[in-house]
Image 1 (cartoon, rainbow, N blue to C red):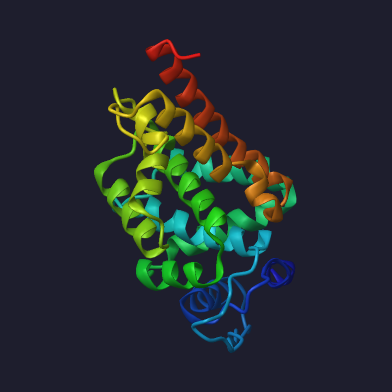
Image 2 (tube, rainbow, N blue to C red; image 1 turned 135 degrees about the vertical axis):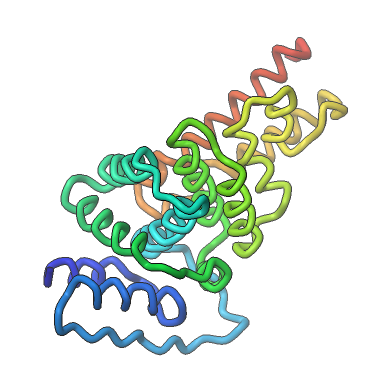
Length: 247
């Protein structure tokens, strides 16, 4: 278990005091006898500028928010848990994924996690492209059992609000996981009444916003995940082109 503790320490780039530090302290106290966790005091001001998010910071944030979403309907679906395990294995490899999933299972066991406090702490430190990537992953987890139920969608919407993600950005990412007649337009953050020129302009804007290079600071593993959003933007644009006979 000592290696597990070292892995957590090596993973973190932020000084995780506050609610996230408390959660990690709970986890360490649950799995390691005799370990006392003292969160590092965070010396910061409200004017602190966001720096590019490190992979370890993103990873821990993802684990905690994933646990919140999975528990939203009062149960932990095996398919959702398996999705998280497979995703981490694909992203990080066998050893790192094992440690990440071990941490995840302990977080799941925690009775109460304040969605608001955790999300606000993440918002304080995490750049906007990384927060969008978090939201996309949360929808992937919620749909691992075949569909996103109402309670899961409500929880993700709440998280998005606390993370400072706009309604337009939220609806765009949400539309990537639902089949509807206007899904492609929602993904591009426009309506069916948009002109062809407005469609083209919206596509260029969204392609720039969701370009995988926006999260290159998270490492190649997360750039691959970002490519999924980017390809969905392209697919939405191509579908509208075909529908309208655009060139």
